[in-house]
Image 1 (cartoon, helix red, strand yellow):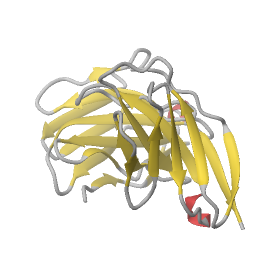
Image 2 (cartoon, rainbow over the protein chains, first blue to last red):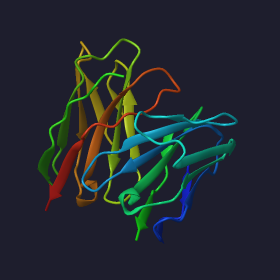
Image 3 (cartoon, each protein chain N blue to C red):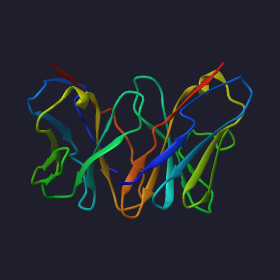
Amino acid sequence: GAVVSQHPSWVICKSGTSVKIECRSLDFQATTMFWYRQFPKQSLMLMATSNEGSKATYEQGVEKDKFLINHASLTLSTLTVTSAHPEDSSFYICSALGSDYGYTFGSGTRLTVV
Amino acid sequence: DAKTTQPPSMDCAEGRAANLPCNHSTISGNEYVYWYRQIHSQGPQYIIHGLKNNETNEMASLIITEDRKSSTLILPHATLRDTAVYYCIVRGAAGNKLTFGGGTRVLVKP
């Protein structure tokens, strides 16, 4: 079946630094990938939709200059949290949409900003 | 996309069937019903989806009412490993984003 690999699974960074999270579709091509954020005991909140070769579409209230998304190939999308602050600490999850497999989610990245 | 309503939590007994309801009264004709589950600190896992007809796979069965305004996910023999948050999502045509609601927190008890 379809597999999406997300890396790293957890990361701790200092306030003010940037963190990059990778999302790879391992056995299928994904023209569209999605990035979600999840706070404790809450549901997943869609942050942005990225299409290969074009600019990402951000949901209302999500700062595009803070959460940089790059989808340079059909198998890789990256989310960079720039100038991270403690309030950015969260569980970040990616999802890839393939033509045959529907939506497949990564295992998530737990970001802690100290 | 249509909004869904699910009970916030439910308990079920190990080995028994678990019936998870979902209300989607504003669903339109071309919108699918998807079910995902999320085990603690993991990404959501696909369970099943359907449009009009009832569906069954190795994980679960999906029963959609004739008017499509509600559906039920059935886990035929719940195990402790089925403890998770279950999300019912209504999605339009291919390429649309998946929008998650609150889900149902299911606790399977021995």
